[in-house]
Image (cartoon, rainbow, N blue to C red; front, side):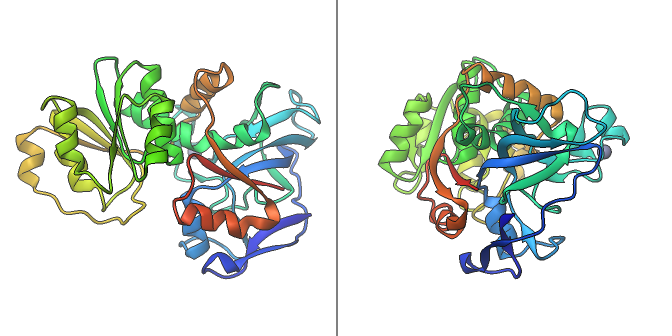
Length: 340
Ligand SMILES: [Zn+2]
């Protein structure tokens, strides 16, 4: 089969479109013919070099496609069914997994990080990862949703219990996870202030439901939040940008407010005044992907059309390099897709 592999860490030039052996299907697995796979910042980080990645490696965490073959032990799925994949791996037998907290499993990881992912014509996964999709959801849309909506749902709903009276600041409304977060907040009727880096992304954030927008390159975020909320500030700040925005994010919270983060795209280290944390009684929450319960819950809203995939642009798999460059330059609004 054709796949994009990396044999060494480095720039976009290390992505090699080539022939690779087909995955060996276990009796408890499903083989999926990949139709679409979305890019995440993780793909860029893996390409540049992350510990634990065995080379050669196939990236790809967000996968949709058709079932090509089912293992002998699987009785409830058929060849030809259209599906998307839960974007994570876990053991499914440990105490964390069996109590439904898969993201606390000692073996929990993102699909396509420690194992081969979906930048290929075929991928073999455990039955638990496979979810049939409705006919009106395209493969590109299906690949655009799993990781970002799972992450945004876990952060806002499971961790922060977002509610209608909340004011939520969503950093990077144009990113995959940001565009998911805007929609999840609006599903709960919260008020959303979104930030983005250019006029087109600000407008697109509004179209997704953001009530107010801030240009994070031209405006000081906390000053704008102060104006927009008449000094009321935010109940929740949805972070994933990291170093570049951390101080402004923190200053945008009201006393008792909560900052929740799932990433540090611009850098992992931030300084803050500990007195600001305790005197204002803030909460800082870390969040990593989500549980299978979150996954099934948020996908129901996708399938009913209440939450929508945001597809930026799709590329043939052989053009993975151009797709990486687009994400790397932050040119996208929503998800960049590869089609094997
Ligand atoms: Zn486990």
